[in-house]
Image (cartoon, rainbow, N blue to C red; front, side):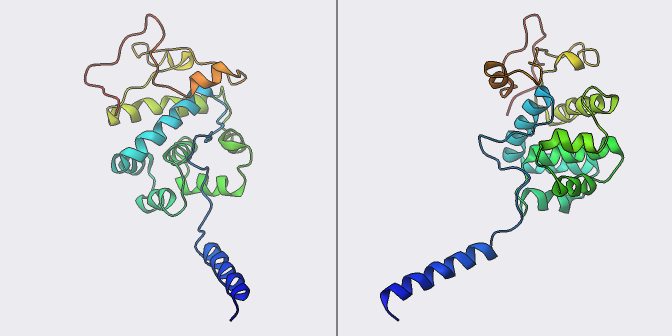
Length: 205
């Protein structure tokens, strides 16, 4: 076997091995460009924070999905492990399913069917539109989850009536660009002036 033929043979073998071991595509890559595109800046910001929490504290995250969102433990493990989903994507799929009264797997399958325009388009296809009572319920559900994790969360104007004593800050509307969007990516920044500070027993991990 001459040298040139050997190079071509091993290159082909490496390509085949990569294809065989490639596994399912993730919901969205968990890198700095990750964006759930829910249609709500507050939701996007806190889904990003859930990514950070779930990556560091996987078991409490999985337990929350199983116990309070009715997701099968094996499904959550499969999504996070074999399929490469981010914790934020897993949370949102199961939270949408809970509002719809459907199994989490149903929303996962809907995402897999078509997600070119992000979670906002998937949710609207399922009948949950920004501004609707169902979407408000979806947003409200973040707060008790954070409470169970012992992790502080800052609410937006829409949730202020539900949680009047919570730390609050204004989030830019979905159409905002540039500096406003960048700020929304860091939900842990101080609350708006006059908002109450988080309780002493709440710590950011």
